[in-house]
Image (cartoon, rainbow, N blue to C red):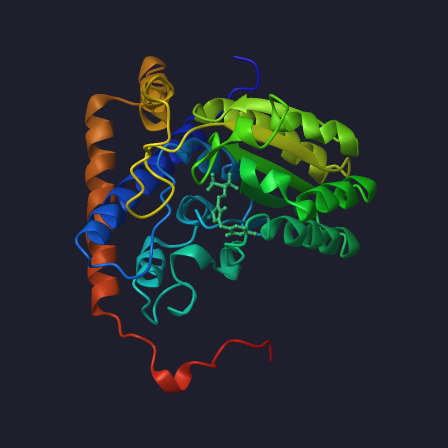
Length: 322
Ligand SMILES: Cc1ncc(C[n+]2csc(CCOP(=O)(O)OP(=O)(O)O)c2C)c(N)n1
């Protein structure tokens, strides 16, 4: 096979997808049981994007995320314990319990705290890339966002600047067809978000966002281009969220046929079948991974549960750079 992907990378991406899926199953369940504060924006159905893109990154590369942050955080290497603790607002969380689900981050693994303002992370990714360029670092910045974000003014300014300055950044659009309850066709006249790249003079690539191998390959090309000083790429991953936008959203605005067709293409199942076909994954191995991840989750929940909440007098701690 041309440009063979190693079994280690393939298994690593599959494992990440299982971790994200099981993490979110647990979070969702606990949320419905009233055990989790705040709200949740699940990433289920989009796991192949985070796993496929992040498998191309080093620890020093940075990622900018959104309100739908835990998939990116886990894929970039934030520990599951620290993610759970952050969801619960505990001091052992990756942002010391002050960020919550929508602001997961850990600078030590290149995950900047996520920004829930739609398109808010896009200019910051461009800024990180500018910093890499100034400091002559061979690193890249990745900005994840939904298709809704591409209608924000700052998104366009950021892509233009990144292109003009040849910045090492990859703009990853997770096009799940809906901005909350609004279908993409109601707010954009074009078929593919990737078409927008032409306006700024960068490549615009469309990829099947439910196929982790396709995402990995497309991201590899964009990352190589960025690392070799040839500037940004807009990578549009066509995908679908398996559940509602947030909380108890029951998706009543989605067309049932559209939903059926997409839900039949579960990215975890697609990856599992592909790896089974090539003999990289076997049934006992699949079972072993599921059980290992379950144990990892149980341990993380116990850790978060046993951790303290921040003390009121520590409210202003860690807010400003020393
Ligand atoms: C600037 C701004 N406007 C509105 C919102 C409220 N809001 C939160 S998520 C969301 C939908 C975003 O859709 P998209 O960018 O496609 O991402 P997705 O939720 O599909 O992952 C909206 C409107 C916000 N957080 N920020």
